[in-house]
Picture 1 (cartoon, rainbow, N blue to C red):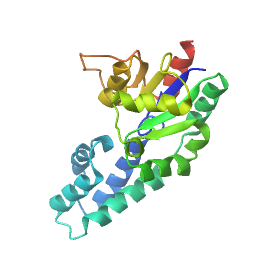
Picture 2 (spheres, rainbow, N blue to C red):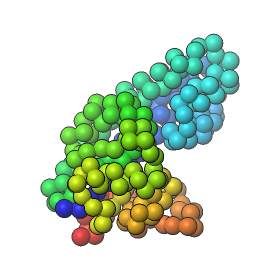
Picture 3 (tube, helix red, strand yellow):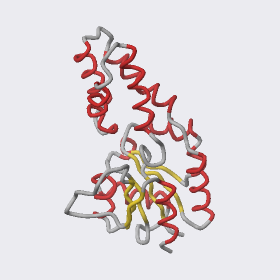
Length: 215
């Protein structure tokens, strides 16, 4: 039974789409020009930065008197309310599990926030387990977090695959422990010369199909 490690945000769940939808509504509410959407998306950097930094940048740009903590809570709450589990993704996970794969999420982030996403979307029902960086004290691409995932699943990393959208955190992390990987390109070109994904796909369903076809 091989191990299938998966990233969470922008792999299994469309965080980028949820943030874009909130950002569009928020900018309309404060009367900002439409082109500020690109600025706000760059500040968010696909969630790689701190939500507190995003809130502070918004306050400074628009001269808001609102407390940063209120903006942080709004962003987090809106994302939680907008993110959804695609039924086809759930189906693909179920098929992979039926075929003998053991799906485990490995994600960077805050434990409370990431677990809430897993449970509210129902994604937790399609996973054997999940590893969250804050909970284990180590972040992707550190090899230790992948070792912890294997330990939790009582499996070895040998023969495992990783699916993710981050060149460094996911694909670089997989390369660091000798795992095969599928990179979700999201319209981007691969530009990292030090390592490369085993496969490339345009979405998690296609990625899971690539992994299953590898056996």
